[in-house]
Image (cartoon, rainbow, N blue to C red; front, top):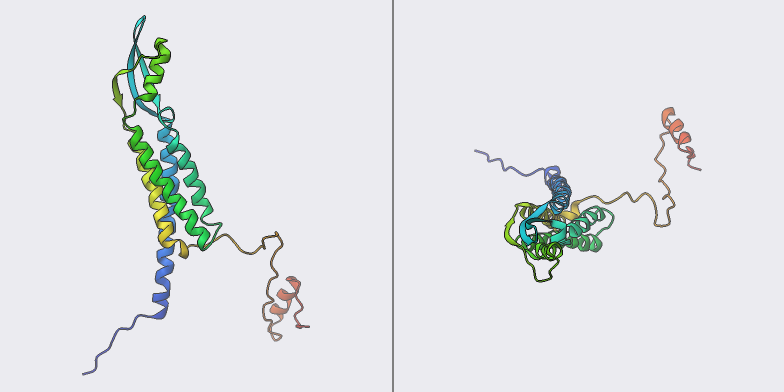
Length: 212
């Protein structure tokens, strides 16, 4: 009895990294773009509310995320820029930009969680409303939006980690043009003299079909 050993096809082995690169690229683009958008959106929403006593009675106060801390929105913009810049650089530059993307996500998460229970913005508004620097807000409540911003930061962090792990498999911007902006010369394609259509195509490209 003869035994047949299954040997993986070379093309199958070569295609596996390509598939991994495409999947990780799609996931990184999606998570990075959505994460930045979510963090920016959450920063514009109300994060906390409270009350301060003034001459006419109790006065309601609210504080948006951007008033509590501007870090999540700023890092979301940095992360989005880094996500785009990943495709403009290669090798060591891509690693550095990928690390910046991951750090932007981690910083967004940390800043959002720290701001989730911060009441300093409400205290500042309370002092302005009461005309008394010692006045503070009371009956504080906090919304879910800081945690939404943290979730956006987590998506940015995921995009950065994917870029660090699979970035070497991702394509870069077209290298058709040199750094000075001049196009690289194209290599002349071989022309079969027995095929008239090849001769006409070569002439259309501005090439000498005779090879002279």
